[in-house]
Length: 280
Image 1 (tube, rainbow, N blue to C red):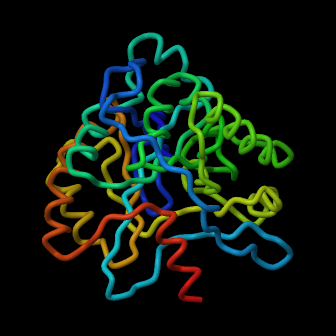
Image 2: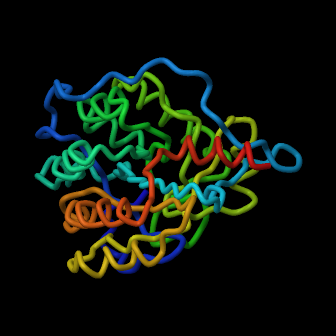
């Protein structure tokens, strides 16, 4: 969800531009041998549309005694960041993905189409690993509302095309089964944006715990913020780029064992959405 935007200096509940995530190998490496192909499965759960077919919005799962939590990571690039990647800026974080694999933590990765274009091998490796699921984060990571953390804005008549183009890029990179979930760039949306995506068949996924790791240098502070915020059913938004969120791997390595000690079980967003449907 977040991208590296120089003008962005704050992260809040709606989220700043998100950074990118990669795989456990170096950029542009082949699918790691340790990654397990995702098995075929039934249709992923979604939420029912709102009144008049309005795109539904999911923030967190049910607050049940079954203490589940979903860690989410956004693989972002804006459409104009290619030159920065070519100059050596890393929009991935191999160490973070390696940590998730080593800790056996399932996660949901929200991927922009532009990132999939830049890192097709990484996208394919994540998408074919049963530990992860890949969802849609738009093609360009431009905002779907005005005044969204300095991001350029997508015209209303182009919003649906942004989502469809992202799915096309993700599939072209080799992700066999991208999920019907969409995260708005910057977390910014309004009624017009929800209306524009009506009929696409996606559930918009937000979060209830902001990690605060974007641009952070104090891993301990980020760890405390996550641990203080997580409840049963929480969706945690985190970032995974070496350039803009350098503490995230350390945070994950600290948060995961502590939450497990507290009785939490890590799940993908799809499981939380499925549980939400069953509790309605």
